[in-house]
Image 1 (spheres, rainbow, N blue to C red):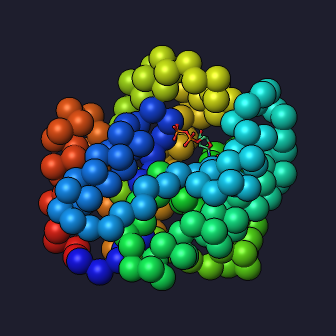
Image 2 (tube, helix red, strand yellow; image 1 turned 45 degrees about the horizontal axis):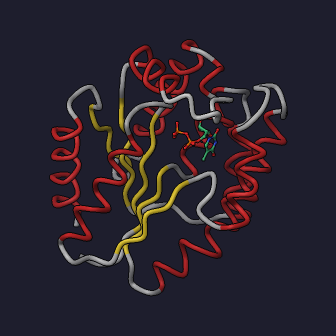
Length: 205
Ligand code: TYD
């Protein structure tokens, strides 16, 4: 398998982080050089920006300011972590990337999609080779997310209706880019979900 850039997406509490970790561990066990990373964050500077984004009042930032902060964090992450790893021939597995911005800032919080796309083209300009969207019933996912009580629940505090909008947003994105984005049913045990992901990965390599 050549070095690939693989991302995991989904609503809060969908189990995508568990799946990203699992896939990274499985590929490493197969002898593949893997970098597991996440957004917002994944580099020293982007982790600092992350704290501004995930802590505090849900209304702390406007949609526009939030978009700029996520994009600044992503640019640093791309420069310092993702591109160097891909250039070194490593497979990069990233927990959230630009599709989260398209859905969260672009559709669910305000109608910023055109700005999101312009900023992405200007400052990021890179798509993953393959994206897994873990699809899950928002009422189950929301319960899981809040149960973590991580202190990073600014986004989860926005509620069930918001999570439903996000789910619809990810499904719409999948129909926009059906070759890159694969929708995975997350309403199953982590083992079964991981199995599905592995089989999709094999058919696309
Ligand atoms: P994260 O800690 O990854 O939450 P989770 O564990 O639920 O994946 O991300 C924090 C929040 O940031 C999450 O609610 C999604 C949101 N987010 C955006 O709104 N836009 C973005 O571009 C990204 C990467 C994340």
